[in-house]
Amino acid sequence: MIKTDIIIIGSGPCGLFAVFEAGLLKMKCHLIDSLPIPGGQCSEIYPKKPIYDIPAYPEVLAEDLVENLMQQIKPFKPGFTLGERAEYLEKNGDDFIVITNKGTKHKAPVVVIAGGLGCFEPRKPLIDNISDFEGKGIEYIIKDPDLYHGKEIIISGGGDSALDWAIYFAKKAKTVTLVHRRSSFRGHLDSVESINELAKKGKINLITDSEVCQLEGDGELREVMIKNKNNENLSIKTDFWFPLFGLVPKLGPIKDWGLNLEKNAISVNTFDYSTNIEGVYAIGDVNTYPGKLKLILCGFHEGALMAQSAFKRVFPNQKSSFKYTTVLGGIKGF
Image (tube, rainbow, N blue to C red; front, side):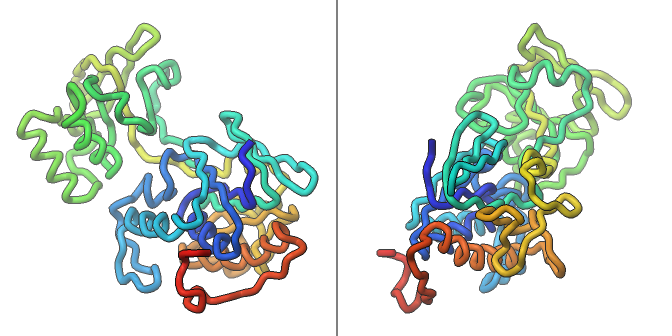
């Protein structure tokens, strides 16, 4: 059982900044996220995408924003349960128990749902027997790249995730084949140039205007069939296939927790962004209220007000005293 003051479901920018606001009030946080790394969409879907509406940053890459947030909350030593989905919410006296799909239990008097648009599920290709090889040669998220060193791998996709992993494995895997259904890529220009250069050098087998259409194996994936736009087929033996077509956001198990929902979002009180369940809050894109704007900036504001309210529940016998961090001479020593 992991015990803390605040359980934060979702480790995107809003969830991470909530750690900072809670830390200023000496509350400990533990974050749960179905993705293998912190940062939410900013890390998993568009790490190289520039963001223009963060105060004091005329432009900042999504991955750099996440890195800065991680540095900002480092003094407060938050805990993380990554690669696991928050599945169940149970009441236990004055506390809540949050249990993940892998059975990890977390206990705290406050739960903050900062899940963005929800938990992310992989976008799966429409191949009849694909489920037969999931976890047996097919992986939608690469959690431990060391497992695939020296292996024959195939990557499908045309975005940043597919390109970045193909570049990485060009130096680590036995063979790398990158398959994309179009001739052009939507990933970052630098990555596209690197892919083309690696293909010229024979370090990546680049197959465009094609897609994987058939899978073969004996309990483990052994071979994939690739079809091009002219309906010509190519068979390639492989150890692993990574279909990296992005992630689809879904509210997931949270929708069954008894929260008031409106159009797949959680209704909150704008006084402190509390839900209809006392002790449970929702901040960021996952919530809704009149005038709601789905901006990271708004989620930061919501996290600040949430923390002030959460303090009263975590420390019911203490009086909170709002102070500016400049008065305290910085974060060190909090």
